Figure 1: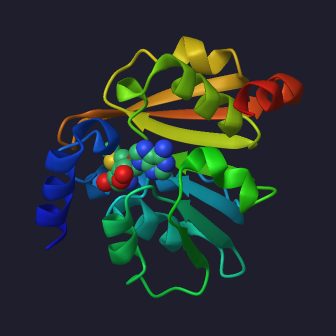
Figure 2: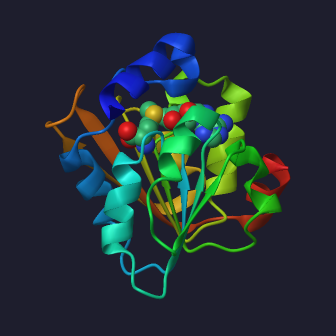
Length: 184
Ligand SMILES: C[S@@+](CC[C@H](N)C(=O)[O-])C[C@H]1O[C@@H](n2cnc3c(N)ncnc32)[C@H](O)[C@@H]1O
């Protein structure tokens, strides 16, 4: 059962998993609705696949989705999703450049608040190589940091999730050179 799998993995590594329950359908849909027709999509931290499934619903038929998940038990579950557009990579998102050169849109559920400052900075810099970066968090404080990397940053509140969450939609990256230098 997905719920049990999630909670077991959380108890093993709370900081890395970062949530006691998978995202609700409301949160997953709110994120996927922001993709704006992107065809070359990357997901960071798909866990048991709650957001993944919604991304696939919104992805055009000729689109592709590459997911990066560090937890091998979650990867096993993700590999049971049968969709030829989906590729699951069992690796740290910081290595994503080894697998994908270009992407139009990143959707991320990474628990940035539990990461160290340097990892958080690297992941946001790396994400600004994409035209659109959609990230959810449980706190409303990420906007100033995102504004350092993107011209346009919007935030939407999703109350129907445990706990309630904020979806940040960042577009129009500012400085590709800075992003490359920090995320290396
Ligand atoms: C808050 S959970 C979200 C899971 C799922 N997307 C959802 O919304 O229910 C965060 C996920 O990020 C994964 N994760 C954490 N750090 C990671 C990293 N450096 N690289 C890849 N995945 C990571 C965790 O294993 C976990 O599955």
